[in-house]
Length: 156
Image 1 (tube, rainbow, N blue to C red):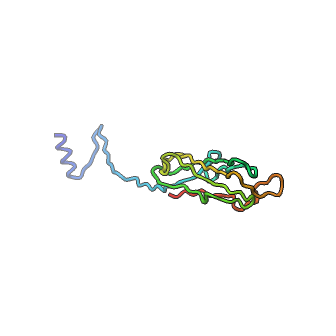
Image 2: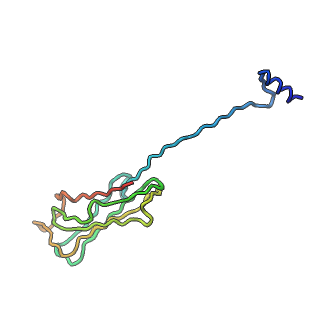
């Protein structure tokens, strides 16, 4: 009977609240998100950014074995984002010391797809044995070289 009365009053446009009964209304909406994917290079010895620890090698003219060195860095990409990492040159003749060196990039197992976490890479350097080089004093550095800076590029 009470239900019939409420229905009748509702049809007449009369509304009221019964004690103990709250009236509610609900609506829905979507949350639309946009994500801009990104990759970044960061060194294990530096804060996030494109700073990579220098690769250092020492060489004595005409030495019998190759001189080697390495540097490590991390690549962090948006999860599931495919990417590649490349060096600008694999073989370089330093224009201050006239030494030829080779660089190689060591990629992580399963690399090439972002995980959202750092993925470690290494650049190995090697100066082949038997080179004379160019130096007018007892010891020289390549501080004056105009081609000593190398570039790593992430393409994604």
